[in-house]
Length: 177
Image (tube, rainbow, N blue to C red; front, side):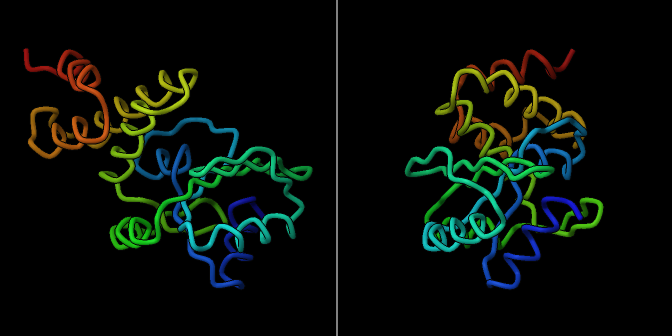
């Protein structure tokens, strides 16, 4: 049983919704890449219950901030990062989520547009060591999903959640010849 399947089953038993984000979401939206952890998006109101759930599965809280909780994994499992959002934000993201199949697990994954917004936000506010990977994810998601970089929706998503330099890079990379 995979880490996602095990956590998903425990979450379902406790009535704790979550959305898959990060590398697993990137893979669900068509760009296959490696990932060394499992990133889940949860509502702020469920944070304590999630910490208890992961502790019961052998995870240990390693690092925490207002928006994230990172857990080290028990043997043979992936580390888990929880991204914490306001309850109303979680509801909006969940309303557009879709099912994704991960081997023995079926989980809700954020929509492509929400994933792009999250990646843009991470580029704007994230850890400098992650920016290059997040930029690559945005580039590959646009490419594999055949998105038009000149569409109003993409421009608005990138400029609202990211930085102008990212939109400039997208135009240079995918610009019309």
